[in-house]
Image (cartoon, rainbow over all chains, first blue to last red; front, side, top):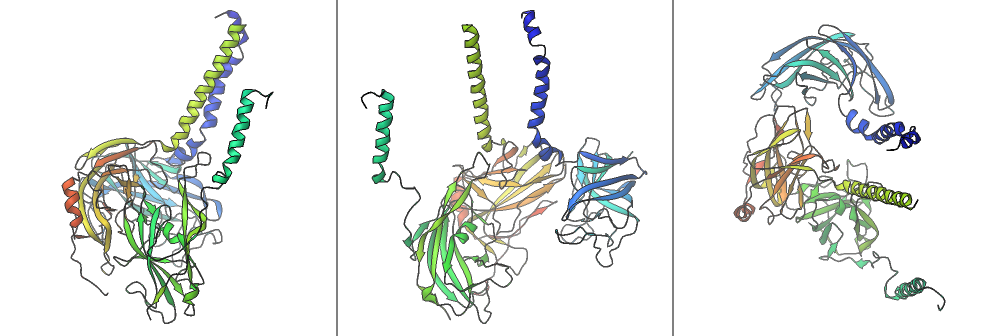
Length: 204
Length: 196
Length: 207
């Protein structure tokens, strides 16, 4: 090409990749809603084994924007042979070829924080994630029978109501059982309520 | 037209032809049909379904699904319903297509709003809301309305409405749906058998 | 000068044509076909996000709720109880889509009234078992295929995603004999262990 052509286009040519980048950015508005928001993509805090990770998780409840603040640490990881039977919730065993991992967590949080309804997950060394069965274990992050404040049901409900007798103390421990196929190595524990936010605790 | 170009002449001819087609139905909107009198045994195509009302009864109970409560009456419209399309269609489309006048209707106990309760006649099971009827299947349903006891059955009229199919709107991405007509397809009084 | 103008005109026309092609392709993107992996009964369909297998297909006239005081549900055509084993491979996955397709392309959804499975969830490497109950016309059984995946028919999220297309192996002879069945089975939904269908003897009640 003529040298004059390069001179003539010395502004537009560098602008081209910038324009292209701008175009891609402007058309990617669906990426946040359909990919980012639907998976665990925002790590709020992380810590090694035995160390507390502290986080403030911003979310919306029935009344609008709010947040929960808490600290959690991985006390231990174990295994168990006991997994509730599907029919009667009595003691049972995991299915064939599947094991049950036990996650022991220690917690610290002010008594007014809504911590019901969380999910505890473990992640293996291949990045595969295994969630606790939240339909069977509804409140994995709070003490049994003392789950503390409930989220408001709708926009007219009060925040922070605690059902009679279910007050929670400021420190407690939990034990969560998660099904994981045998032979998989767990490297991380994740604690989360709504995607994409989560707290990460390393197993090693 | 002497001094016009060929295309302008053609345009004028086309315009005249369009106007001339009016007496032959050229201007009439496609969906305007008359409302026919409702009859028992008449097969009505409401769009997704063929609906035939077999009989209408008034009862004080409908065992095993409805027990007498001492005062209410229940109007039971028994109809066969056939999905004649290629896709599963919601049974709710039939329920919503049935309306009535002078029925002295009451909400069922436990319902917040007035609505029909629908039962499959062959197994006496209530048809769940949102139940999809698969293509090619025919069911016999009982559509039940709870009524006050002082209803004048001779004044009761029933209407069956139809739907037009609207395809996916590429602009708004509204999905395929059945849009209810403004006018019923069939309407009128049918004999109502009373079982005391 | 003439050559310059011709080039410009041709470039504009080319750009408009390409733009039109892209725009019209994007419109038909509303009906984006899913990526289909075919299999037949007893064989596993390996999808990007999970493995799907049909382990059994059983015809029935009645499906009976687990609660013994409830009435049995009778098919309008014939019930097909399709047993499926679904195993996620990468992450916890909810398989929301399960429907049948006949040889003419007509779709059939699971019966809500029968109270069998409507969806099934699986953790990676942990098989989940489900029984779906479809009420199907008696003259369309032969050649039925199950379409199964994580996308939902209701929300059209099958588009552009991978689904399994599994031939249920129903023959013309089956189509003649299956509708004559009087069999009744207990409704089953989902489980972490393989599900054995339980046959039930019905007793008449009331009127």
